[in-house]
Image 1 (cartoon, one colour):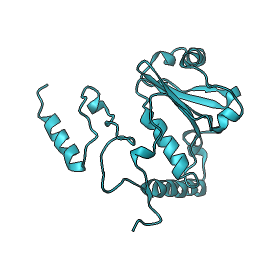
Image 2: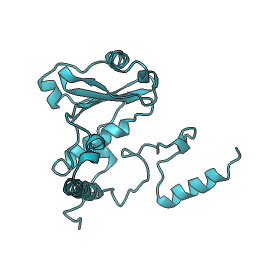
Image 3: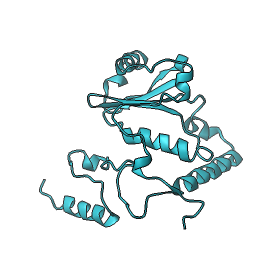
Image 4: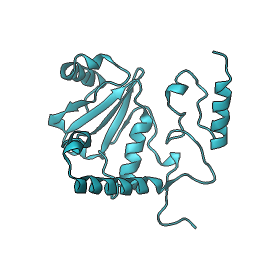
Amino acid sequence: MESPSEIRLVPSMLPQGDNVIFEESSFFTRHSSLPSPADVLAAAREQDPERSQYTWRPPPVTFKSLNLLVKYGTEITIAEGQCLWAIRQLLKESIPVPEVYGWQTEGDMVFIFMELMHGVTLEERYPSLSPEEKSSIAHQLKVVTTALRSLKQDPADPFVGHIGRQPLQDVLFDTDPNSGPFPSITALLDYYADYATRPP
């Protein structure tokens, strides 16, 4: 019997497709449409002209009047949007994540549209925090980690790959179309062993 602390997460539960818009999301209670990829690229050039040229992982673009952040680039994946969506759907009480409004694919770039979270980053604040505050944050991170570990695959259909059964994404796999998903850890290790013996 499945433990109450475990939550099944299988690929069939996830939104699928290169272009997915969540019209039931809170964004569409206030606005009629998301910015287009062309709008995002234009805003990127305006907000950060130099770094916006790096299409593989440029800085996210913000539309403050829409309370919207767009993460985009050639190294951004639909799987990232699916992860945020799944965490918000299944672990909303334990892990606060931005609401995802949708994603779009334009050429070789993926655009993930999500709620703009206001505030100061932990990276900025951490040096000035007291020991008690740092301890409190460590406890919160423990809660987050425990919640993430409660997500379980279907034991009858395990795999090693991205959340939606996509291939793994890592610099090692960039030029290899056979990068999973793998049916087991053993299969992944066999892949590594084979990769290490390939001629340069």
